[in-house]
Length: 206
Ligand code: C5P
Image 1 (cartoon, protein in one colour):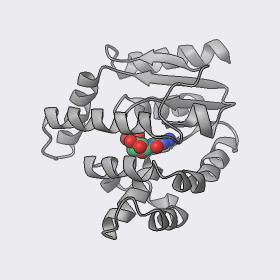
Image 2: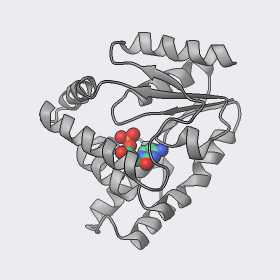
Image 3: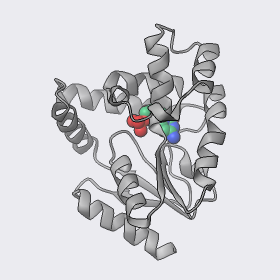
């Protein structure tokens, strides 16, 4: 069983993915973290983010043990991730890892931008999560402040919109719902209600 969750920045897909995986006893992969890890390696090396050769070697050298690093969560790394993730060869290198993760038993929940369209086009269930950009900016700002970062909501909103626009308009694996994806608008849902709505979608197709 594969559950694919896609959606724009800060739409709540990560939380949903984690909760769905827990509910069904499946493994969970936040695929954004993979691109963030590549971006962080590039930033740490002071590399030009559009340097394809360096980005590809950073992708080849990724260590999944480090995907939990809290330093991957920052806005700067998220921004850089949306630049390196537009490099087709970087995506190519990371494809097999994601497909293998999805294929291993007993089942998996993957969240990202292209899970339902490119990584797992045959996923059993596809959910495309959307939320009003102002709601997303509010949530992201509160999360950043909870981590002790000094976040300005208007700047967070601008960043989210810029990243969505970059992710939607890249030629390879752009952010878009698969034709068979179920839309879940969580603008007015709290976490519990969002999780229930997602479980309802999964149960309807299981
Ligand atoms: O979801 P998250 O904000 O962590 O993703 C960071 C960036 O990684 C996104 O803005 C997007 O450019 C890229 N990404 C992607 N494909 C995915 C997941 C994330 O291109 N499946």
